[in-house]
Image (cartoon, rainbow, N blue to C red; front, top):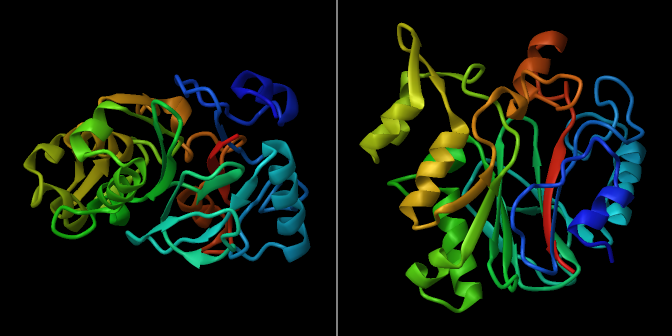
Length: 277
């Protein structure tokens, strides 16, 4: 099995190998739109089976990903909710959830994105890993409990440590997402966060009457820090991490819906994966 550095030799050169201190035996990967067989507008490594792409192309792309990982990526039916699935060696694809945790080897927690933020977690000893799909709805959740809080609860239970001890022994990586210069939202989105946590107001910049530019990665960082997780790597809200602004590298639902017309069948899906060898 390839190590984290060895992955660079086995995967497409455009894919992202997260730069973070992953423990021995924990591997991570973020695909880009390069390296697959799908045709326009899903070109070329589309991993989503719900966006109007040819099923055979999606199947081929997913098979390529699994071969590159040397592990089994388990694809979820993501619904912008807060359900967390604990993966076993034989967990089937297509279960409805927006995050996955596992202590099993050889099975990859896999999150598909095309503007939403992927969040990867690992214990420092590499015994438990997790991946969460963090769009604004999932991050906001309800009554201050969203996808990151739910994921962390399942992650902590699997790690057999108390929340405080787990936090000290957890690292997080944030992947590419829609950036703070591209993510315009209404006042209701801002209120969904600030009503529960006033300090999140700093993540919103007024853009027009009733409109704000939201910093999704910064919102996630604040929530992780509130859980006690301080080792946070990856997306720092700068331009290279923005899915909208890097069309040749990243799929973006918001950008491509504007190009191809309204609807869900206009762009592909990338994947963030984390697994134990």
